[in-house]
Length: 313
Image (tube, rainbow, N blue to C red):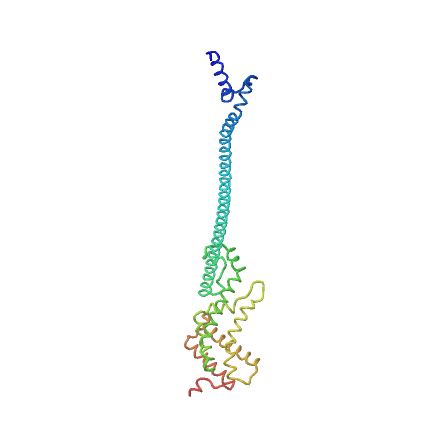
């Protein structure tokens, strides 16, 4: 074969490969080269498959990466949402803590206000009690109490409603203290119990004369009725003489016993009150005790009951 023929054959063999593998691959095949193209169809297909696989794999890899990326984004989104929920929950918790703190602060402030109010109330009562005890009820003035307590007159009224409320509170405490003392008298012997009640009343009166007088001297403003609870407390104190009289007079009815106990208590109160009155000729406590005992002797004798002196002799 001549050189020209060899060159032409080499060219014909090279052109199909260039058609398939060349970078451009844009020129249409020559009609005369169809057979050669057909002969290499399988190879071309194989090459295309290989090329397609090469192209497909990166695309699939990219898809997988994109899918994985989406998964990461989804997971990241989930994480962000979880964190958002977490922070939202944390924010709610912080708000709850803040509200609880505010409530606690309010409770503490209210507690402090209540404590301050209670201290001021006790201070007002102590000042009023001291003035009554040392100078008597008539010397008690609301302005003096307010000034001594370091507050306004309005504050005194706010605590007790009015000035009567201050006096009544002091009087309640006085009769409560008196009743406690009287209840402590031994009750084994009814006759000795009556003497003991009279003697204890004298002792309490001598210690707290002005306070006890305030209980009986106080008159409500505008002629308002005296509070029932204090009246009942005084009657309960009188009634402490009721049980020993019932034991000494088992045949007497309840009405008679109630009148006797009240009369006995009132008489003892009158003797002691007048005997301790400083504006008149005061009776020394020891002599006053003898007078009270003598009155009880006479009263019991009139009821047909042997007094202590007669029983011991």
